[in-house]
Every structure is written in structure tokens, then in C-alpha cells.
Length: 291
Image 1 (spheres, rainbow, N blue to C red):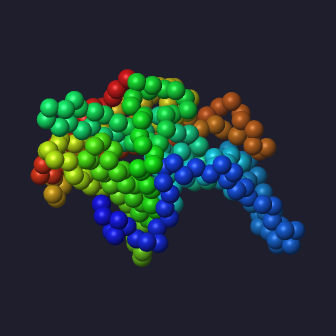
Image 2 (cartoon, helix red, strand yellow):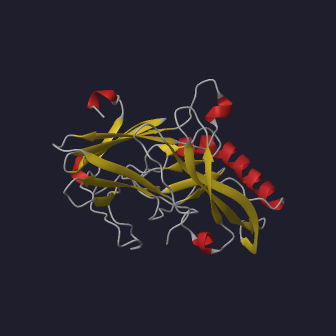
């Protein structure tokens, strides 16, 4: 995608632009803390009432700090969001109001496949680095961070992959349904990725973009069972939409009045969905599961 189509006001960072000493939040002055005291007391009262009713209250002050890895979230107002980090991973999940999970499943990633006549095909995962867990070690994680740049201006974000393979440049435009004056649609917990593929080589190429997604958020609950995947297809203007529904059961702990886990849990059904739209010259394939 030409650079002039990305707004100049967008936040910009190249994949290899890591901060050696990222900043840390400072403690507010005493005067500000004193002004916040009435609100703090109301929040504490709210927390006690929610726990007394057997519910998990909203966490207004999450303690975990993941560092400068966040990007523009996928999702709108109040319906849940999943944050796609500026280096291509998905590090923060907010599927329930006030409950944040900081995990980054290795399988949640885009990959690109390129085939030119007479040249061996290649597959490359579009993330800046290998997953810390060491899982999916057989995948090709060798993305050139110096040639990949992220831009963000909510509700949109752009990632430009220059020469991801010789002569192939990709641009991924991320869009969330944040619509002024339309609260209902703007609350949809969804996002769209629009891919532009540019071939500057001297021969034709077949290019495939692969999106893989784990059924869950990367925690222990993913292995607890009770989840299943299902193919779906729908007619749509411009081309059929095909994808996979990932039915998931979120098991959330019950807490006592002091916020301690009781050892019991309650289940909240959850379904993820990933899909792609066919178009002229574009073929959509799928698998409902992989090992």
C-alpha cells in the first residue's frame, strides 16, 4: 500500500525499534490521590457488593504490566476487545468487562506463502519473533524486522511488510467497527483485516495469506476440554464468506467476599470466529483444526 494512503498522524514503529529502558508509570502527587479518595471508596464498596453476590467485580487497577507491546485493539465499545500488538502478536484479551488476560498464543498469527514458477515455494510467519514458549518450533519465524513497520490510528492500523519474500510486499489494514453516532454497531466485538499484495518481481507469483487461531486465550482452560470447531459459509455481496467457528467454554473462578477463589467455577460460553471472503482471483480454503 502506498505510504501516502496511511495518515501522517498515525503512530508509527518499526518492528526492530525496541525500547531498552521503557518508561514506567509514576505515583501521582498526594493532592491527586486525595481527590481520588471518594471514588476509591465507591469502588471498594462496589467490589464488596459484587463478591457478596457471588460475582467477580471489574478490576479497575490491573497489576500486570506487559511492557510497550500493545497496538490498536480489535473491537468497539463495551463488547470486548482483543489487542493485536504492534509486533504481530495478540497479547491482551478483554472478553469480559474489567477482566484482562495477558497471554499470546503462538498459533495466533498470519503467515504468507509465495510460489514463483521454477522457484521453491516458501512459507513465513508474520510475527517479529519466535514465541517465548518454544511451541510451533517447526514454523518459519524468520521475519525481517527492519523491513516491517506498524502504524496505528484507532480504529484502524496498518502493517507494511516490505519484501517479505523477494519482490513481494504486503500491507495489512486493520479496521474495527467504531462508528460515530451508532452505539449498537460500534459495540460489536469484531475486526477486519484487509490485505494488499504487491508483486514487483519480474515474474508472476501465487501468494497465499494464512490466518491461524487457537480455540481460546492460551491459558490452561484451553486444554480443559469441552471446545469444538465448526466450518460455516454464508452468501455475501462481492463473494461468499467461509470460515470456522471456534466454540469455547470459559471457566471462571467463583470468589468469596474477600476476593479469594472458592475452588468452584462458573461457565461462560464463548465462540470465536475467523473467516475470509472469496473474490475474483481469490480462493478461500480452510481447516477446522490442526495439531
